[in-house]
Length: 132
Image (cartoon, rainbow, N blue to C red; front, side, top):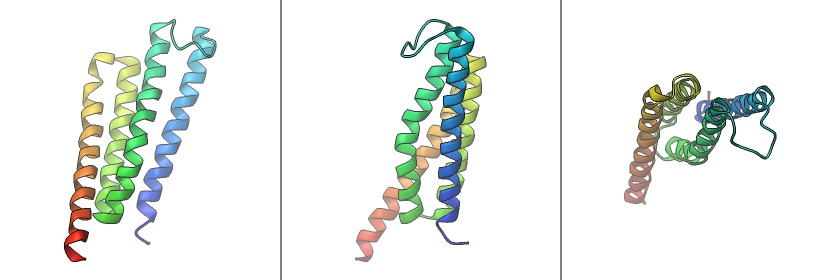
């Protein structure tokens, strides 16, 4: 295996998660009768919609952090953090949709993994400056 395969897998799994959440929104629109472009109406629909949007917003900063950490820090550890981020986002999604008051555990786990990626990539980048 090359260094790029594990971060690539995490990227693909992130894309699959985003597509799955988009399908959840589509199903919820049909179930609760919320026609696009509306994003409000039924409280349960709004939760499902927010899960998708929150995860999409987080993925926007997570994916570059994953790749920077894989490049400048360590691809294996970056991928472990990426898998942890994914697990946290799935936990968050399930909790927010079914028990919103319990969503903080999944959010915290994914945020911790993201923070480690940011720190790891920054430290690795600074190290490259020291070697040049």
